[in-house]
Image: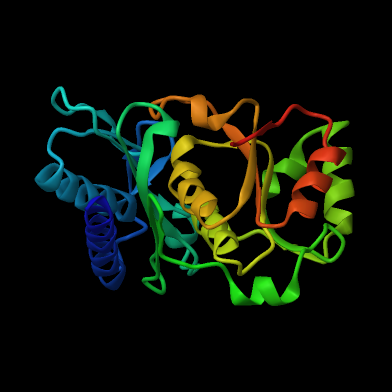
Length: 273
């Protein structure tokens, strides 16, 4: 089953990352990756570990990864989307909140994803979905607390949204003022998975900041866990896995938070079905 491949690849990445962390070399800068960001040794060893597992188990897959870019396979239809370390800045500074993500698709579109996983490198916890299988069942705490609206909600938030100019910033401030609190943690994949697991009320990135590898492995998991989601500037499910488009995302299990957030924003958002 594909989820065993995903789990093995992510655990291999964590093993390699823990090794370079112990040796104190994880934060060594090795140049810039395919998308222009600084590549740390920790990023590179995670990517190499994931790619090695994929090549040994799914040798025909086309791999799209943040550091190495597009690595074509044979004529097969399998695609893999990799974020070697989501939260590299945290990792490099010794802040214990970072993850790796992997999604496998039966074609080049986000809609073709059939299995994904995200690993919390600090705890080793895996968030995995393959079809109807979801590693984390609906939260008992969420069922007990019932439906939550924006007033009093506790969400993860992407800070860059607040840097944008008016009038969008004014709408974003209206949303944040209604929240009980928001947390900026620096690993979108892990934050979305924690929202999917019911440990926060949602994840909000209200401007177009995130690449596909920052979203897709967690999004597939969270949708399977019962979350509602919308993306901007277009429906992310229709995009190709090798696209360079950046997205905003609203993700929550709470219908009220979802509808209230969309009603305040003046920009176009696409609900994911």
